[in-house]
Length: 566
Image (cartoon, rainbow, N blue to C red; front, side, top):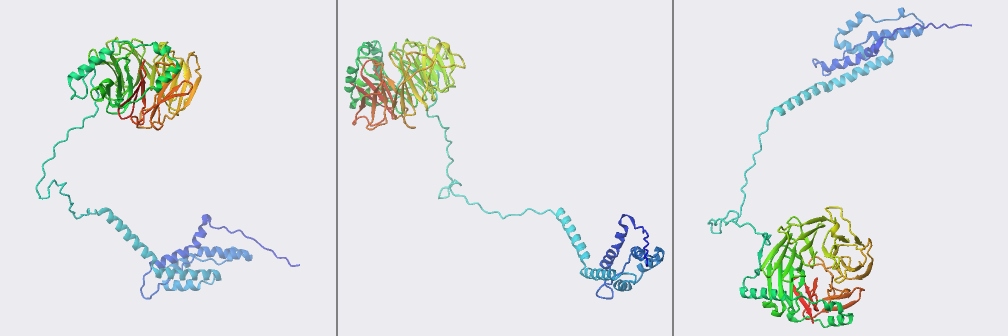
């Protein structure tokens, strides 16, 4: 049998891809040649054929090895031929590249032909020259933009039209006179200076003799002490029949102060009916009902803010105490005809006060931010002797009628009873907390005789009565009365107050129509509705009883007093 022997001879290739780089050299050189050639004699440039003889030699060596021949017999292109081909004429080079040497394969010859045609086409487009020209234009444009400084645009000046009023010219063309300087605005209700104030009425038109006669009458009726036997011996039947006999006449209605009434007090005299009221801007009006509404009203300016609490001294009714939000407490002494300053604290807004001692020598003062102060009138200074923070909003303070070291405060959803003997700067805890209020509490007062009950008025439309006979850690709720207490913004809030003649009866304002003042028992029963279709047409938010007589005074938000009496 015939045997075929195949001899494989190793061929060393060029390192680092040099052969591949030379293989593609012909195409790059052809493109370069056509891009840089000039159009001399013909319309289209000729291509220069560049043949990589080293690559061809390597290819021929591989073909010879595959055929079994020695590498020495393979045709190898010489260096002379390569150099001579580079120096040939461009026209001949282009022709040779199109035909291709006989040593190349058909594929190589076709490839060289395509390269030549593509090079001619791209050379005819002159892409390299155009790109270089555009790059040069762009570079020059950028340099010019950097160097050139644009001048600012000059806008044409437009004439601004101004009215004759702004030009201060009248319609005839004459200049108007210069305006006069306006005076600085003056505060309508300035704070009053500290110290004594003379007891001079705000209305200076009334004669001095009339004011003098009023002060003498006030001093005279204050010398008689009020009787207390009636409130002890009075029965419920006689009390209720007396309430039915109380009426409101035309002479018992008068405008005492200018603005909304915040507080009302009744003088304890048995012979005369003297009522005091404090309004929103610091005025105190005193009305002697026996003299009528024209000659019996005297108004004094003692504060600059609302007078939220007012009361006659229990031991000396010739003295009238008043507290205002402006941070002052004054005592109007009719015997001296002055308003003496008892306490002053301009940093705080005061809310209410009560007499800590029965002779009115010491006062318990409550402030809106929860501070309670003890003021001693016997000291020359107008400062407090003790100040305690109760960490609660304080609307009213009221002292226990029997155990005077206890007092009750009403604030935001909380009512508490404290012991003044254990007060300290901070961290005070109530002896008894009266729970159950869901909104802010307007007032809280002990019952007048024994103090065994506490009456509260809450914004959740409820009147509550708590049992405080035993001051332990828990005070039970005895009675709950549904009552409309939604007075709104323009009315003073309701404050239910006890009748000092009874332990179990109180009065409160009403939103019902016709307008009225309602009297209740401690068990929730309504005893009497004080109304008058002819003379009572407004809501009396603040009410006050006479200590011993059947006289009830109610104040509305326009400065009027309505006095019901037998």
